[in-house]
Image (cartoon, rainbow, N blue to C red; front, side, top):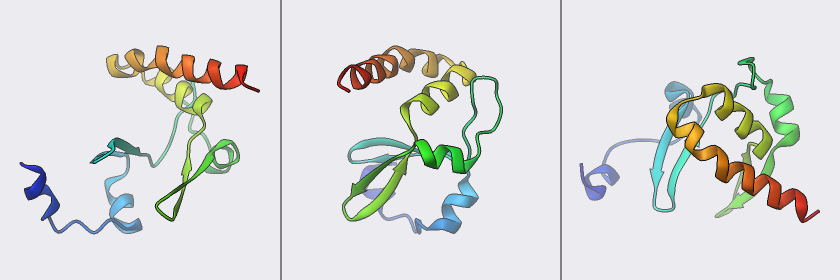
Length: 104
């Protein structure tokens, strides 16, 4: 399917649609974005939304406030998942975390 064909699909991005999809990856002009219904810790336990929210980073994206999971939570979830693509992402995520903590 071409980008033009995908843009013409009757997809309404709202809370109901995102809830129906659960966890999903959406391709955008800026690259892929993961929309997650839940996040797991290193042991595989579900992390409560309140805990994630307390550690999240707020980002204004074209006037929409988006709560982005904290880097430590993303790293823990990828370590738990253990898929090849998650393991491949870990060195860069660790480097980002290490550079952000050294700036403090």
